[in-house]
Image (cartoon, rainbow, N blue to C red; front, side, top):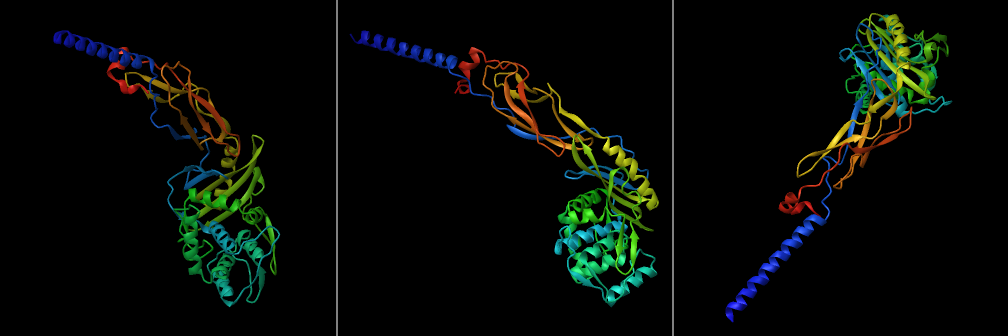
Length: 407
């Protein structure tokens, strides 16, 4: 009797084990697999478009940019060089930071004193560019900005900085902090507010940042586009920028000194893809001012022809993969061409968004998307990310030996 019960118990146990095995096998076969995760569910890819064939000058250094997008490309070793009078743009932005103006406003009245007259005489003796003044003369803030930027009065720059910040040393302290805030990390303001001192230095790339900030200020954008200005008690004085108005050039500032050579920061507007854009160029270290001006023209013309609809990611381009634990890879590719309208040499940020992948999956299954944001020339675009090959399920043996791959 005991033996029969023992045999029955063994049969029950064996049946139970078989039942568990069948249940385990059934679950391994029937339950869905865990979805696969790609390495890096989302990321960004910075893509720099092919550089345009720009007619760079054969001296010094240069840079080009696009208002709204900053520096696009630089040429030559970006070593800080004297800026000459282009530094007056830093003075203008610094003064307007403390005493802002709107279009049509003259701003506070400034009385020039004996110190301002002494500074004027010093610049005359040093053969710097000046605007004649006398002690006790009054000019508005706007008139001072005109006299500083158009006939490029060195003495007016120092007078304006003294008025706004109390002294040249206080102005220099503020200006050096201010240019860092603008992102001009290779620029130093030293000794004066006019740029006559060779201690005021910058790079062509930094000047592009400066030019972008100037063009973002409506008052300065208006002034730097003037061919001449009527200075009170002096008369009409002309802009040293003799290519203003040619090839859509709307400014910005010339510079010229023995230490700096010729320096020119320019802005030009053009209609691209039915939208207005402003291209910026900077040339430093030219043999003279005339060379910096004449060599700007072909650079501007070439830039205006370097806008194009550009493919950033080609259809079928592999951008990632899913690794199957049981072996094999499922590649992820672009489902279409991702493109944008852009200046050649400019960078664009492509965003990659990936979902998990359920197995099995056919080739061509959508697993996410790639996109590029809208810019000033074109709208944003998005394309699907698809599997380049099928995701294959594991073998029965693998399923049975690796139960953690199921849900």
